[in-house]
Amino acid sequence: MNLITDSWIPVLNQDGSRATIKPAQLADPNVMELDLPRLDFQGAAYQLLIGLLQTTFAPADVDEWMDYYDNPPSESDLQLAFNDVIHAFHVDGDDARFMQDLDTLEHISSTNSVANLLIEAPGGNTLKLNKDFFIKRDLVEQLSLPMAALALFTLQINAPSGGVGHRTGLRGGGPMTTLIRPNDTDSTLWNKLWWNVINREERSYPDPDFSDGSVFPWLAETRVSDKTGEPIYRDEVHPLHIYWAMPRRIRLIIETPSDEQSASDLIDDVTGEPCQQVVSQYRTQNYGHNYEGDWSPHPITPYRHNPKKPDDTPFSIKAQPGGINYKLWHMLTFTGKEGNSGFVRAEVLDHANEIYAASDGAISASGLWAFSYDMDNMKARGFYSKELPIYHIPSNQQIQLLETVLELHELSDSIIKQLRNSIKYSWMSERQAKDSKGDMSMIDTMFWQRSEPLFFRAVEDAVNNGGRLTPTAAREWLSKISKLTEKLYEEQVLSSAVIKQRHMEQLNNLRAFLYGNKPLAAFRNRYKSTEENS
Image: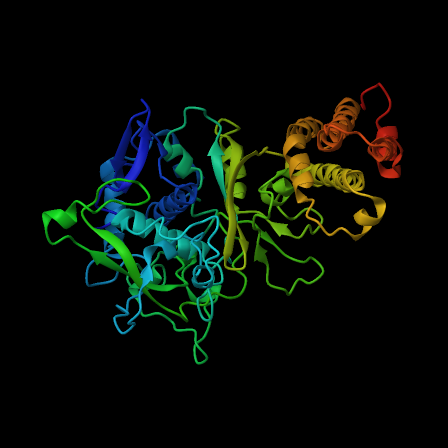
C-alpha cells in the first residue's frame, strides 16, 4: 500500500455522501471535510495532508497562495507534485516504509499489540495489575493498513515519554496543534487545508532532498540515541523535517490472509470495515531519534518560554485537565511580541494576517481549531478539541488588547478562587474545609466554560475600540460574570434539600467579594460613567 497512489482518505462530500479518495483528489470541489473515525486521527490526518502540501506543493509567494485558494489545482497537477515523494509513503514492502524504522527490527523477538500505537491504550504495568478500569484492554486487536499507518503517524507526532529510551515527539508529548479555519461557511476541504500551507517567501527554506532522510527520516538509518549517540537539533535537518519527525523505532507486522476463512476475519477494529490486510502486532526498539533544542516558532504549534530566562529552551503549549478554554486564547493567537509575553504563536497565524492584508480583507480566517492530548507523563488523561475565534488586529493595537484580555483573566481568576472557597466552606465545616485537599477543579471548569460567551463579547467590543473596552461592554461583562458566579454557587450549594445557615453566610461572603473586592471595585468605578469614552 502507498499513501500517495492509493485511495485511503475517508471524506464527506457536499451532498452528505461518504467517499474514499487519494491525496491528489484533495482539491475536488465536492469534497468538504475529512471523515476519520477518531478525533485524534482527524487531527493527525489534517497534519499529514498539510505537511504533504507544504513539502511538495508550497506556493512561491502570497500571490500564488491566493491564486490557488480561489482556483484550486487539478488532480493531475497535485499528482505530479506528489510523485516526487511516492517512494517515502509505502506502508508495506521490503524497502523504506512510511514512519517506520529502516531496520526491519527482526532481531527483536518480542512484539507489541497494535493497540499500543493508540496513545490512550493502557500500559504494560496497568494490564499486569488489572487496573484498566476505564479504557479496557483488547478493544483494538487489528487495524487495516491505512488506519495502522495513521495510528503510527499520530503516535510519532504526539509521542509522550514511553519508558527508557522511548523518545518523545519533536514538539514534546501531546503538543497543542492550532490550525486556521476559513471564514466561508461553505469552504471545501481544500480551503481548510490550504489555509495552513505557508508560502515560501513567508517561510523560506532551500529546496529539499527527498532521498537522504533530511526531510523523511525513515529513508535513512536511525541516529541511535543511546549513551554513545547524539540528539538531533533543528539546524541539522531540513526545515520540512518538522512535519515528519520520527522519534520512535517501530516496524509494523503486516498480515495477509492465506484462505477465504481467515480473510473473512479481517475487520478493522476502529472503522468496523473489512480489509484485505491487517496489522495486529509491531516490533519496537528504544533509543530512536532524540529531538532536542529549540524548535520554535513552529508552523502549527504555539510555544511558551520564560521571559526572565531567555536562554532556556521553549516548550510547546499543551492541554490541561478541564480542556481547552479561553484562558489560553491569547497564548494561541497573539504574536507573542507584546511586552515580552513569554509565548510564541504558530506561524500559520502570521501567514493568515499576511493573506488578509494582501487581499485587502477579501480572504479572511474566522477561527482557530486547537486540539491536544492532556498527558500525565506517558498516560493520556484525555483528548481535547476546540474552535476559537481569531481577529485580524492591527499591530499597533495588539499590546492594548492583550492588556485588556489579561485584566479580564486576572479578575476572573480572583472570582474563581473566591467561588471555590465559598463552595468548599459551604459543603463542610470550617475545620474540615481548612484541612481538605479535595479536587475542586470542576468548579474552575464550569466557570471557564459558561463564561466564555461573556469573554468573547467583551473581546469583540475591545477589538472594535482600539483594544480597549467601552464602558458599556465593561459594565455588562462585570455584571453578567457576577450573576453567573452567584448562579454557579446556587447550583452547587443551594439546590440541596437542606439549606444550612453557613450556606447563606457563604453566599453573603461571595456577594461581598463580588461587589467589594478592591480590584473588582476599581474596575467597576473606572467604567461607571454612563457616557461612552470618546
